[in-house]
Amino acid sequence: MLSAPSQCLLRQKDMLLEGRWLLVNPSDAFVFDELPETVSGFHQYFDQYQAAARRQPHRHSFGITLPEETEKFDGIVLYLPKAKKHTVWLLAHLATLLNPNGLLCLVGENKGGIKSSGKLLEAVGERANKIENARHCSVLATVVAQSQPFNLDAYISKQTMSVSNHNGKTDIQVYSLPGVFSHGELD
Picture (cartoon, rainbow, N blue to C red):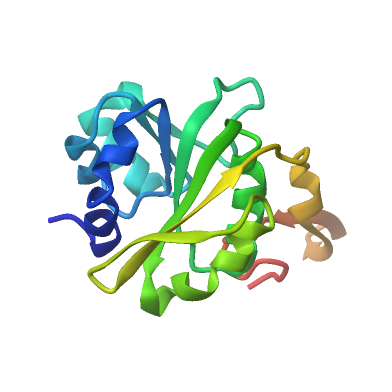
């Protein structure tokens, strides 16, 4: 069974039929069974990537970001991450992957914070509009006329830790991005 955000998104399925689309961090792999081959998946969670790639490997990629030389998309749908800072850096990155005047969408559950996420979309595009509301979820969208350059390093947290070992102490560098458990700290 599809997740509630995917069910809400599929109510706008006609939107996904025109042009080249990307779904980012979908909450289930089965949503791709309902969509045309022109819709690809980008995953940052390996379990969802594995489930989706097992079914249709040519449509899915896994990583931190997509390369800058990736062919541009007409539209991108981001499933709302749990961490606000994760959403901010993903939106900044995804905006650079759109054709001029491309559509950038956020889908998520009301209890997950989608209602207050319009301002995050407006930081990379024009006025955010609610285009769907169902199953206690919403789809918000904005047009991105022109994106700003994206610098992943601006979002990375770096810490130096001294670790005791049999030779004394060793300094190690620990890097994290928003969305990683205990971002900015060592747990």
